[in-house]
Image (cartoon, rainbow, N blue to C red):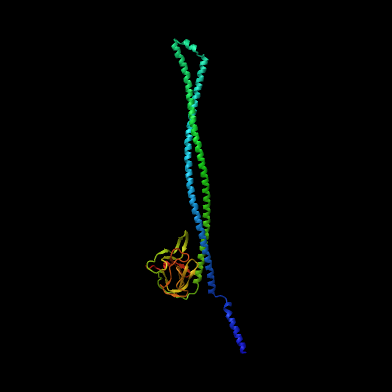
Length: 391
């Protein structure tokens, strides 16, 4: 009987040892698991943002290179357009010279034709009235010397007419030669202008192609920026959810009334490099849920108010080495971008002004500074409304 009781007790003890694993998880355990899942998703969102930023930077570099090329090409387009304009002006001037030569030739030709018609009319009249022979000139002369004078006059009239026609013919020939020279110049200018126009067409084509490439890059950049913005929004939503989950946990810390102190030691480190609210960072508009206090690496970071360390670890949400203090009354303060593993541990009580870490640039940070946040009732607050710079 005694042996049976001992055996029964042994079996009961063995069963009880498995009971904790068979019982359902507590709410805290479930929350912790969900929070960790959310943090993993935040890490994924951050990696996605980094990758998208790399692609954006690469696109920006390509765009800059193409813009440089476009600037050179547009300069060439302008120079060629100016060159073509000069050719057009020269062609216009040469056309004026050609038109003037054509007018001169036409006038000379008309003068030549008019004189020919005049001489024909005179010859016709002489024929109709009877030709004047040398005999008539001789018989009509009062003396031989008078005959010679009359005969010379007839010859002079004929010679004058011939010389006049020869002069007109020569002027026409000269004018045509000059016009041929001008026409040759115009043909050369036409050829040069056509060559310049062909080069401009080629450059215009390149410029148009570059414009299309740049437009495509802008579209791609806009799509990447939208994806990055969406990832950032997801990160913020997950962070907000985590804070609400953590704030929903029952706190055993008694809130202590009184002022909040400046979280960075030393009088000279009182400059807020970035305040709470909207800001532009790396060309992107975003809301900053903290204040950034610039300070050298290793500057002591102080507990702004007494409380219990909620967590002191590396976080994947961009904060790097981080300390979170539970001050009770649903108040939490966050200290991000510390230079190394915090000197405090979770569950440790700290007094106001106690050193909890040192300024650094861990995580996603530009330059050494303290990223300082305050939450109340699971809602982010403007830290500047709580901590007053005493320096």
